Amino acid sequence: DTAVSQTPKYLVTQMGNDKSIKCEQNLGHDTMYWYKQDSKKFLKIMFSYNNKELIINETVPNRFSPKSPDKAHLNLHINSLELGDSAVYFCASSRILGWNTEAFFGQGTRLTVV
Amino acid sequence: AQSVSQHNHHVILSEAASLELGCNYSYGGTVNLFWYVQYPGQHLQLLLKYFSGDPLVKGIKGFEAEFIKSKFSFNLRKPSVQWSDTAEYFCAVNAMDTGRRALTFGSGTRLQVQP
Image 1 (cartoon, each protein chain N blue to C red):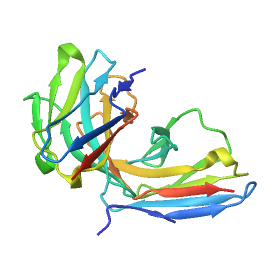
Image 2 (cartoon, one colour):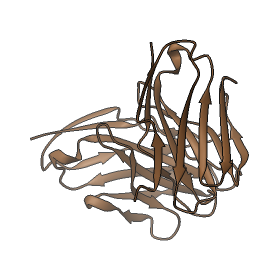
Image 3 (cartoon, rainbow over the protein chains, first blue to last red):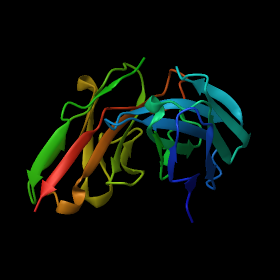
């Protein structure tokens, strides 16, 4: 069973389009995250949700909007895609960090904007 | 805000060589420390973690890391690398007292093991 699953795995789209990436975890965790990995492999937190509540919102363009319908799901919607949005987006989950827990990552979604 | 530095960006080793990857973090309080590995085209997998107790922690696949609080370091080691260890390695920190509920990652070290 896949613990953290993301769909799609690959996404190629044109500039200006709107797209969504879905994430689901079956670990019973209460916290979920979106990370962006750029072309140089640098990983940076974008958003974090705890029990469907947004707790981290880094400096991310407001074209990016996370949505958490329940604790097991955290989706990422991106409006008006730009070339610079091309990256690998990783979803992760954990029990709320700060209590000696670790994060589990999904397979990643490679987004290519052309 | 906490930060993590990985000074080795690209390391090339021959099989059976010993490995040490550096990781330093900048936070004076209590931390949880992690090493993740990313094999080509795959997701991040946890290699090992430090929460408390013995500063020498052992992980999967023969990896270990030592937490040296006075040096703010958490270096990764393996006595004898294999070709299958070729991957990207990331150090990460969770600063426990800040209330920030997310890992901060270093920039990663690409390890290339030559047969």
